[in-house]
Image 1: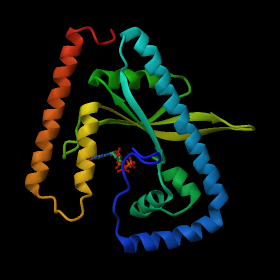
Image 2: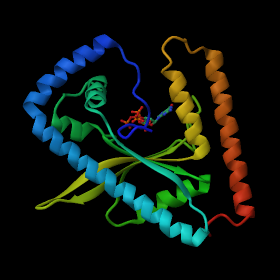
Image 3: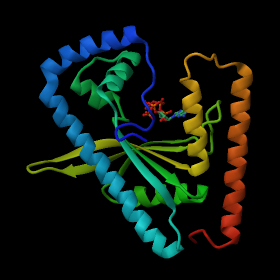
Length: 231
Ligand code: 0O2
């Protein structure tokens, strides 16, 4: 993963890029320093959540004698993607609109060993008294039609600045290694420009997602039998 994104940048339509960069230049002239400050707040919130998971991993590794978290990745949405998403949502391009309409400016992805770890860590995070759940989407219990699985949480956390406290939204994606491997390959294939994605390919990808789900379920069962799970 590059530092600032979950996935490598997508190849994009050059006309859209030109259009957006003109708009971004105008926007940056008016909002530059306020935008930088807001992004710094999101970055702080992202670091808070990342730390919370690192702390939980350390604590659970003592109880379980293994690491429930394989890796934690964090990213801030790029200005280009922020404007693109606001446009797609038909929302105003402004700082207040960004704060109001986007929940994934700060993102933390937690890759877990077992599927049961996903729920154990989500519960532990949501029990913390400075974390508030805004929205939960369980794509593990209810996978997307293409087979995508992950647990998505939108939470708010406070950040403590020199003279004020701000409450910021962060998107948390929790998934197993197997879910992550499927999602990252699917993402690469979806953005492959020169090949059209046929229905047959989509069906094959869905079958791969089902195999990955079966693998997670069987590993979870083995994990239980071998005493890997937290009781
Ligand atoms: P990036 O670079 O990962 O941030 P919302 O954000 O809730 O307004 P939406 O689309 O309802 O909009 O959010 P949802 O369904 O919770 O999913 C958003 C993110 O989940 C995506 O972010 C992906 O990271 C991931 N995701 C969702 N569906 C898929 C999928 O089918 N395949 C893969 N590989 N990832 C998926 P972004 O903004 O696409 O990018």
